[in-house]
Length: 81
Length: 197
Image (cartoon, rainbow over the protein chains, first blue to last red):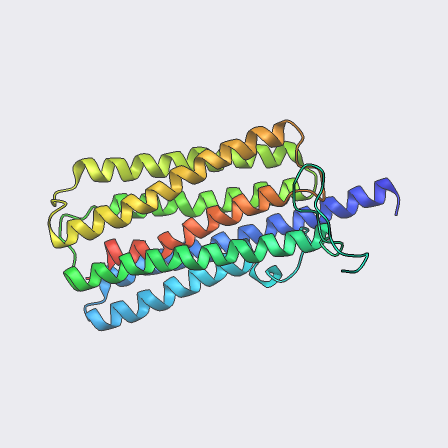
């Protein structure tokens, strides 16, 4: 692989990674907004706890899977999406 | 003892095992970091559990929802900038990577200031059931944030000196993973302290 080809491939991989980051933060923003709406609008304490718990787990899962690269926990390579 | 037995180096340091390649070291480092996250996560989980034990599901009406939402947004955005910074540096785009790390540092500092403001205007005493949980949880979390900011500054400076060429960026990845861990903790602390009622 030539230096130019390697550079282009690297930039494409970086762009894909940056795009993924924007998708994840959009998901986090939507879930956070929903958390706030649920806390304000829902009257049942049990339902609030249930919904907020599910949404918090969803947000944490997104961060752990995509930002923290959990699937690579058992691998040594540093390159990521 | 066979001839392939490992012997000590003249400096007295433990010699590197033949199979401990760079890739293996990164793998071990990565698993070790996850073990740290797990153990530290248990500490935060204990604090969150104590909040419900001491105060039930309610929270004082004086809780500043706007401030909680604001610092949550700041920390979530800082996770994005940290991720973008790491992605850029891993792919050799040092300039953009350092810019994003600097943004992360500033957002982390803003979050710490926000917690400080929250502490200064809090209308509940540390001795209250809710106050005990609130100051403990935000305090230990803010300590992690401040620690993260300090080490992000170290990484930012070292990146500027060219210490992280492509293929040797594990310190950046590890630091950013730690930052995301702090964010994950807040993902649970935010509803626990501000939203559940």
